[in-house]
Length: 437
Ligand SMILES: Cc1cc2nc3c(=O)[nH]c(=O)nc-3n(C[C@H](O)[C@H](O)[C@H](O)COP(=O)(O)OP(=O)(O)OC[C@H]3O[C@@H](n4cnc5c(N)ncnc54)[C@H](O)[C@@H]3O)c2cc1C
Image (tube, rainbow, N blue to C red):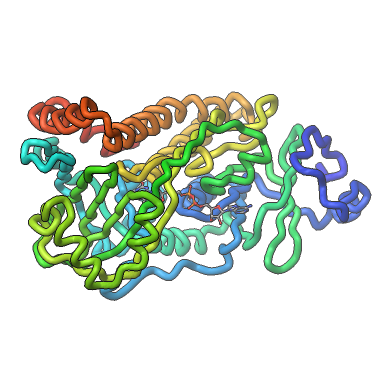
């Protein structure tokens, strides 16, 4: 079916003046076609595009920087973005045959997590251990570029997957698919897809163009990230300190004596932190949380430049759109954004990928891939998990930044209480593992 027969139910933005229906007809032969278009080139989009191509669909991925392969980091410096990867994410990457290709020497296994309250009392602490939960590990810490670069290599060899380095400007939805208008680095491209996956990040232009409502709030905080080297062994432990005043400092272990800091703080303090030199950072670490960080990690010395990211909560009310005749599916940060205190944003996105691939793989042979029944199955499968993780993370963030003396007492007392309950800890670890069945 050609473009000219397309019944444009819903122009989501006005077509650019140079695209009249006559011109569309004329250039119909230049129209590219595919089964599924994936918009977005982050880890979630790349994993999803690869997985769909591996299922045998003709997939086209679109994102501005897809004409370059992310260089896989080497040497003893660490790329700026570091993630805690759950066993659920490992499973998704394993199914894509990517996990084994990742340079495992650059991944750090996490076997313990320690969380410290903000009163400075030794009893206000929670210790979660893989050993206690009967799991080999709780998570891995690795560089974003390590995962992205390895995914890029796998994508290059996938013949069912094409890539367009460009930006989606506009799209139109008809009964049998979506017409995408893309401004690429070479020439504008028009692409017809039966289904579109929006993995276009927290600001998701597709989500806005579809007018999907979101609940969103700014945390009025920034996360400052910095890679460091510490003098004490980190003992494969991820540590997190809640500081009086609402700041949260996480120290994630890296191979050797590396640690990656994520410090959630006010915008003003983030600006101050970004201007610190090496000596000033060392002084910060030495005194922070009454010396508790120094006691745990010894002398902590910066090994990268610091960067900062604004923190917010976004939850899309629908994961598919438009509501009447859905042809677009939201995944990753396009569907949900959360505070990094639990290190779960990417992991949740990878669970979206797993759920979508499962729904499509298990579809009845008589259903088209854009069948609303299928898309609703995906939405139903993801709504519960997403709502729970966003709610729990938001509650924890608010509980630990509250000035209310009762809440202050409760949160610190709660850490100790949970620490004494083997049953609750096992449950918490099970949730944190995020295993995809
Ligand atoms: C400080 C910090 C620490 C974090 N730590 C962790 C952690 O430890 N563990 C964890 O699981 N998560 C963590 N997260 C969350 C994690 O960073 C995100 O959830 C994850 O990167 C989202 O990936 P994504 O692929 O959905 O989106 P993104 O990586 O944002 O990718 C979006 C893509 O869409 C493309 N795009 C946008 N608009 C268009 C358009 N019009 N046309 C085409 N392409 C477009 C962009 O170019 C980009 O390629 C952390 C977040 C922060 C801020």
